[in-house]
Length: 374
Image (cartoon, rainbow, N blue to C red; front, side):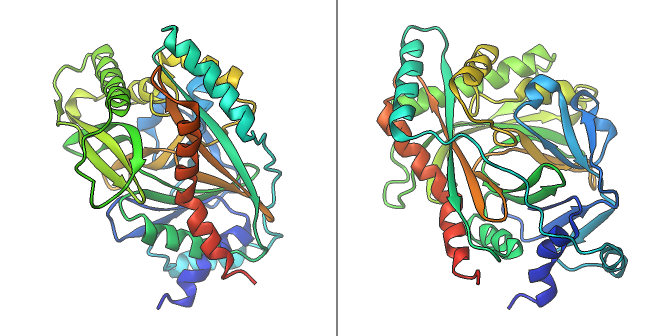
């Protein structure tokens, strides 16, 4: 049974309207909460990221601005159990109304999505670019009284192989997600990243089935992109494995891992991050052309969707993940953000179906949590 303090801590932090991020790394039983004392959240230049430590949270637009938010690690709480010092800090803060920022965004219907996808696929077939990622927003009401602590716990149970998080930035809102895609991990020995692309429904009886040509090609594009970024930063010594299948809940993706000796990225970390973001899995290729095409084709704001986030420079370890399978919350509603990679071989209707599959990552857990709300 989960102890009462553990159940309440994230909800208490939200009531205090203070910046924090709860997270659990893939295949790790330990969850952590990073919280800072000041309500104002610092913005940092990503090129200088090695100078900072804490929870880094970058929106999609950081590809243009080069900046991210940083929750400083004044307190680090493990497994939801507050220290006496942290409890005293929370007691010193007044209770506030539950944060309820405006999260309205443009919701595209099926017909409009198909038209947009067909238009982009036609450009791809003319070889004006290799890949572009089209996303959409799904908006739905939620009951008052939803426990965000229980939501975080349920996501952690449902998706042990994902990076699971829930963060709150005053004036920016509440987001949570369960993402399978690593952007960059750095420890005292090595750095690593991954080329992740291609999506299919997980079936234990057919999990070793070869991938279709469309997904294989889509993933190879991402591998070539990472190779070019490393080369552009003077990194020639690295290791790659053969493509493997990564399970992410009810979905599977095609994956290639890249491992680099840490001394080869010294002084280059910020440049590598800015080179990788946004990845072809969330933007497209060529990156600049795809980015500007997305800005024209999508009527909604991506906000933190397809940005990246994670703990940085804590205990000689840094882990940044691409913000996929995520949702944005208000008091009475939630926006789910989903997308898919289009290539010349894409079929618009199948891409719509893929966004529905991806939405289930959070939707099934949120719907389950609705039964706990009063």
